[in-house]
Image (tube, rainbow, N blue to C red; front, top):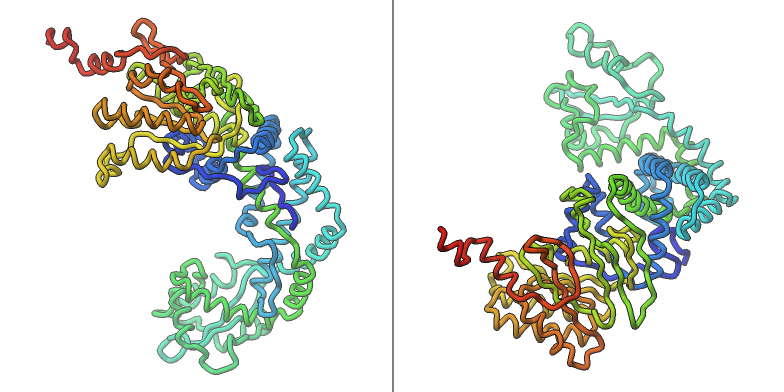
Length: 572
């Protein structure tokens, strides 16, 4: 089976090996809000979501995509030309079959649509080859594509296809309009209809159809006889008298002319209101057109049957892939120009030592959504290794715990999608899935209660995780009493360490973080570490560091926020 062209998937990597990230985790990481800023249309956001929520632990995928993205980011003019190309061949995107056989029953409309698809394919291949030849490429993905497109264009079969299609396409484009004839009975109801002529010019307000409709509104200009210019014949939709009168009557209703057939005959198909009726009418008209264009239909079938094996999907499949990279490149180019730090991520092979190293990482929402000036963004350094595989993150309320938890997840989503990440350096082993456990909405906790819902959801997530996964917990098991929550959380962390899952557990249970030594006494292959958001003289620093939990900072902060410290209460 021929490998389809792709700039997202390297040769030898099956798309089926990717694991999807849930919409809940996508939302928990804030990626839905980020994509709303990057793409204005829902179909564009769907492209971003579809690519970035499918994760592979194979570092070849991340490296392959990162190189393609860097090539596309490097050449703004290339992006502009590719976008123009995508607009020109947009109709091809809906053509998802790898092969179209020509059936004996296919009529003129079907055949001409197929002809246009093949002609658009020819134009697409030629334009793509030109775009790729105008820039110096470095990525395996785009170089492979350049070679493949060049092979297609220089293949003798393509040259033959181009020659066969060219003349036929110009010939079929000559038909710009159809003139219909409608017979009326004594009650001015449509009785039969057919094609008067196929024309090489479209109807306009100034042409004969408009003039005819205007004149028919006057009683003294009804034409004698039915000959038009003396040389046009009337082609019945059927040889039988009064064929399918009900269908014809519906047709007249479509044209807004059944009630008064002398008015509105020039309205055209713009006022069609019934799709099924439209299809019936077109079938009858196509049958007549086939008889009027017998030679053209025969030539179309011959040429298209000859090239029936032409596969268009391997080109159209590139459209959303290019769009994915271009949307990100256009957006990040602006942010980088404003001074925000972004860097290319470097995927690593699996190792027993370090599995992530980030320098000056920050939450993408700060730049994209919150529009925080780059000089006000606080970057953090963080790493995952055997001694720091699960972090218990504590600190003051509104000190940035959730922000840093989201940021770590975002780094993997972006890096595995090949996109530059926020920070100055990022080396990582790709994950096979990202799982989040953030506070649930109230309506999701009615059946189990809050604690029951948390436990049920955590068990499901834990069962899905492997040692190659990333697990992000945000105030998990905090909806019950402290002692109950602590007991459940302690066992949960023990299980996480035993399974070796890379984890950040953002929690207000400082006692859990202080029990790091107890948690690490087990024979688990990985260890936990206490990570705190450092407070600088009571001010939020948004800096994290590996250090023992500071204890009561969270409770004191909550008390001050709601005015229930002793001093606040006594001073009113």
